[in-house]
Length: 131
Image 1: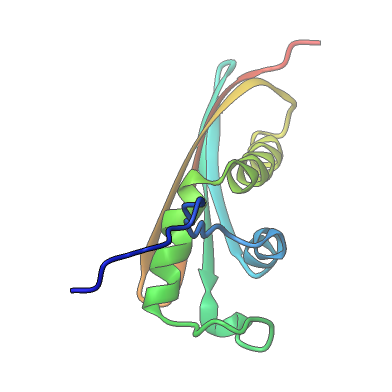
Image 2: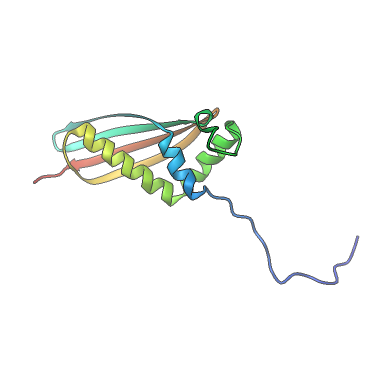
């Protein structure tokens, strides 16, 4: 065993997060499916975004496989940029589905991977905005 005679004054750590362009690429490649209903003045619904990484192979350098999808799903859940982008999509879809403006929307964002697909579930609860 060798003895260290000199040591670094710096501790290094590697931090991995989704690249800024990844946020737009992920959402741009997503298939969107929304459902929901307005019951009185209360709206409840969900939007599912499905991203098949195979459809992005011409734009990404990472392998479009289940490992990449898992990593994206994990990183997406912790990335406030992604969550805010998802919230905007969810509220826009909810307004379109409800056919009216909504106030105080609460959006729950879940991300998971299935094979080489990323699945984002955006569940929305809101109130009809009164004029």
